[in-house]
Length: 474
Ligand SMILES: Cc1cc2nc3c(=O)[nH]c(=O)nc-3n(C[C@H](O)[C@H](O)[C@H](O)COP(=O)(O)OP(=O)(O)OC[C@H]3O[C@@H](n4cnc5c(N)ncnc54)[C@H](O)[C@@H]3O)c2cc1C
Ligand code: SF4
Image (tube, rainbow, N blue to C red; front, side, top):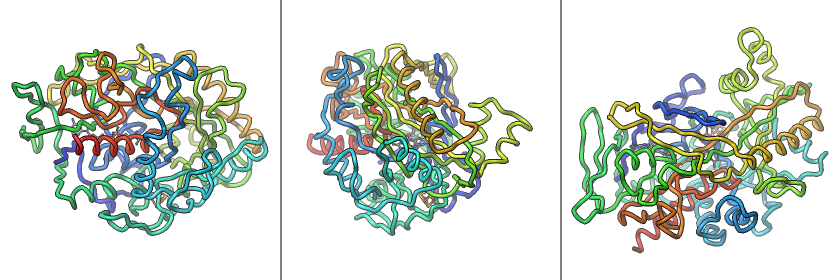
């Protein structure tokens, strides 16, 4: 049985209209503070059966082995309680099941093979490829959880090939983009699982033995109780710790809510003489991993680079926020939308005591205290960001861009229930099982001990599969 706060959408409901896409964003209020406050809502969290994969970008790099051992390598950050070879078999199984498109040969990992050929490159990807060539950087077709031809995995519905419409972040009507509602959830239902949408969990009851005995949730305005033998809490790196902190559970280590991380996700934009039409095509179709450990780095860790494509309304929001344009100046800039292209990064953020999710004094409709998230770049993130901004600006200059500008951004929600080997300084073990309550498992981005440079979702899925097997074997 799975309880999900949001609705169960029919993908045909997803409209080719950005103003109608709000339904798939988690828009409950969160309080965002710190020196680099993160934007939530459409920027960061989804809701509905499928969660944030309904509106994610489906860009699926794997973790780099060095990032899992960053502390050992650099003395900074945190090591994971597992190594890459623990994850690779799960990456391979997830990629085969969800349908990942990618290049025939991956320049940074000679042995890697993707099940499907790449999706076509969009306009910004073509510019980025040309710019990387001029700057002697390697770039290739990105691993994308988008099926480039009709695809059916065992137990899951048949999916159509991508039609390059560019509306991935508004929900894919076509089933081509991987989301949990067209992959793992139908498989689970076929095996007898029940999914209860519009069911908001707000309580976890414990028996005399201290184990979780029931989940309390509100559906249709009524509180209901579901008895259980075990619970997987998978509400994301904001709602999972918020629930645990509100309920005073699983926090003997005092680590719940600590080490909140968003990736450094700065973008560089420019205008090109010829039309680029970035609204078309799968947005993140090119990747470079050459900056995972740049030779001239003055920081620990590194970053990935990717091409961008952003639909007009979302882009207008970014321009207003990031460039400070408004009114006629904003519309004049957007008149050149067809000629604009961007490049962006996903960069390592070190876990930090100062970056933390706590509970505010304000409560929501269920009487639970709202999450307050304080996040700020430390010196390492600031140096990484400066390096990436320089590299991306050089690339866009090499490509002939004019009117280049930088959009500072933080993306993703990670940390807050870190995994580790010891219950004194971590919330869950390397399989996601709570140290404090042995029938409570956590399976979402909250368990990351460090952010990694790779975008998180593929690793979340691989860890989920690993947890599920450990649970069944326990
Ligand atoms: C715009 C956008 C683009 C992204 N692009 C990429 C990308 O290209 N590549 C990548 O790797 N990652 C990307 N991400 C990040 C990725 O989608 C997330 O990291 C990942 O989906 C998080 O998974 P999760 O399991 O932690 O939580 P989520 O997928 O957020 O799932 C949490 C679910 O729990 C539900 N929930 C919360 N509280 C309750 C409650 N109390 N009761 C019941 N249900 C509850 C929510 O409604 C939601 O459905 C993107 C994210 C966004 C928002
Ligand atoms: S570009 Fe492809 S994956 Fe994205 S929404 Fe359109 S059909 Fe779906």
